[in-house]
Length: 417
Image (cartoon, rainbow, N blue to C red; front, side, top):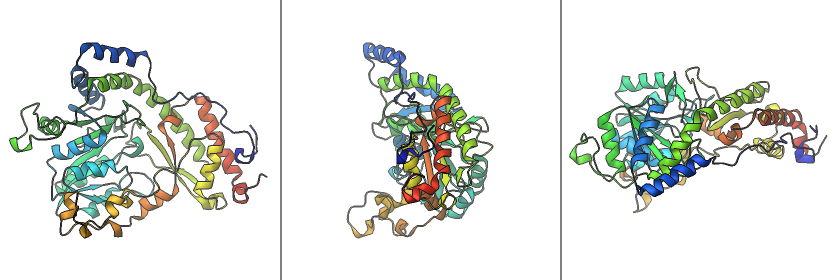
């Protein structure tokens, strides 16, 4: 390997191009899709029901209800928990805005609680501080597939009479205390979008252990139709968020590979963490001991420029990418900086969500949570695709970090040593 940085004309550290394109598939998907085609059951049918049962069992939940996307699953989870107008749901600000859209679509108000400084997950102490008389639920986000501190969060919820919901959209196959994510709270949602570890392009599923909640969720997804005859009449309404058997067929095949793929990601994440732990300026996010299995949809680490001659994160990432490491800076700002939360809805006639019509609605424009704002400025990310690599390629990724770190002083001058 050349000692000269690839950014300045040296040979890249990552020489192996043995990563398969994403999404991965084989003849199994093609065969099962043809079975659905010839069955003429193209809508919600037997493959959807098989997926519901199989995935719920895979995550240790009692009921699964497939739908068209992860955001729909989170909305259905909220409405299944009887959350609506006037309720507040506490959630993490370090997430995709789909988490918030699920809450808002149910009619509730989003309240943000900061993340812990050494993790990408919501801080239980910040949750407790954010509770108001209108708080009805806590929606945790198991970011990147690393479990939140569910024991502490459930203790807080029990003390205040709150419901716990799970955004487990990154949590396929991940566990907390050996129990699947998505089965800890009253209800949860998962995503099967194109970038996800299990994908069908689009799609989602909501899980719960409560049959009455499952029935309400089903009404949300399936135009108000009751599956278990448990939902009250006033809750038997909803849109068409159904999955098709074509989508379910793909996911049934994907699900058969996920245990082995998760093993690979766990091994590669551990290798990377061992390498990065030798740097003073790169710190992998803390994994709770109770997070007994991680899905690693995103591998995240904190970057400290002061330890690398003041080299900015962006410059360090540029050098990593030149070495062949597909690293990014992740979210550039907390989700409360999204235009949805920064618009002055009170000044206009168009008010799309219930919270925008309330006299005491929150003003997110003045919200500043220090830990998530720091995370938005200092994280380095690798995606699940980068972690789904051979051992040899992952060794080269580790060497790339070592190489860039050793030559960080050159990055400020822009010249090779």
